Image 1 (tube, rainbow, N blue to C red):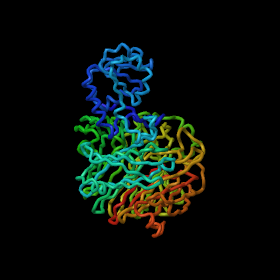
Image 2 (cartoon, one colour):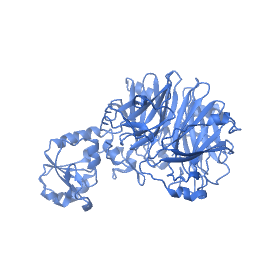
Image 3 (cartoon, rainbow, N blue to C red):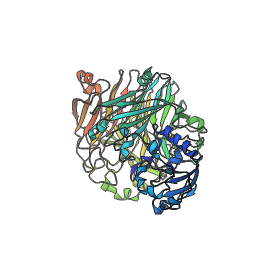
Image 4 (cartoon, one colour):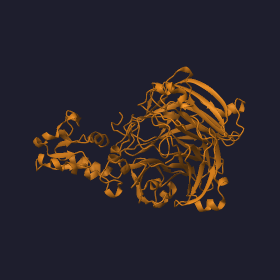
Length: 636
């Protein structure tokens, strides 16, 4: 029941074909093409680039009368194309079809064989569903990844709840000029509510898109749906990265999450089951112009063979909230759930709704289906130092409660050999515990705050960070795809935040595969460039930076906190030094003076830059009524 389309490869990265075929701008033209060919009689299909399979998955061609199919590569002769065994294109001269459909966006390439085709045979290609050249970074290479720098965002403005997307024109620093955002807002049933183009200055300017402002500008009714983003004339990055704040009129709801991971996957995991006094809603945003049939989306407890299916069709580009308790009424936190998605939607959000109505939003993660345990990770031992590290903040223990839940994130992970280590902000290790080889269907949520309250561990600085890492005492092989969900709650108010992510090798001179990673250059040169949006309407900005180290690296970081105005102009800079294995919790309002903050305004932003090491960071806001948000930062 999964879509048979190619969205991502661990070897070559994201794919562009499904984006080109399913772009909201071209969807109406593609549907007209399908209808037109259905009226043409017998169709011969020439599929030189293996495009027709994805096209057929996104647009229903069952009305076509396909009589013949042809391929260019002799290795593909015999491949079935829409029910017909394919023949070499050299035999096209004998066709009896009424029309030839060349399944290519670049049909002019095939003028060289026009003399082999009957002169009276009409030819139709995918030219009619191309984006105009004015929207492309590389018009001569239509499926170039930079032509489809796109993403989806959950976007809502209803019942006093709002969303605010923040990013910057980071493409400019890679040489891009004339960057524009083409934006399309789609409602719950996938209908287009508005589309517009937003030019960006030729600078590293900020981007702020607020649902309340969009609703006023286009005079819209309340909506919950998807905001499709396409960065035109991009360079350097083919993914639109962003942070997304959710807030309400009362000041009680506040949360943040980040970009949706632009490639729909087969499975997602790390979805928490609800507690007794709350609901968990899984927001599914159909990312394609084809409906998701009833029963395709399914949820089950991690490690269980039993799944529950969502028995409702989700229209093309439509958005639906799935009440987890309605499908799995017996599942309760700290049980964790996995989602069968069938490549129909990008990484989904989930929303935790408390009994008081306060909401918070976070995201699930891609569950890999292609990974297998790699004995080399265990066998390399001390050469990798501490190895793969999954760092997370321990917020000030007097005010916050911290919980850690290791989450299996690959179908081949049957056991997770995990240990947890706590570090003071100074980098001093204060506690370590083996959690053993956790079974796939575990529900081991470690209450870090309880360890501190019981005296098992101490944090002299009042805050610090924890690290999940592998423990090979039980001899279990691993794949390097270690993930965890981290939950934070304010003690006095009960407001909470979830954040989840995966492990990496950090700050060591050797490499293993693609690890360690850097924001600029390649190892052994390691660096950091993180984006930090600013608070708005009285909400204060805080940031927790962690300097994790798998091996011996610099004793301390050399970190610049760079404040920019909305136009991308640098306003101020602060230098901080974080001890290796330590962390720094800081507030924007206490770090930059009133004049600097006024010049930046609420639409400015910060860049955390370090050319000496790779940091892992978390951004958040604190509201006046005790609400707060927290999620990990993105970089570019």
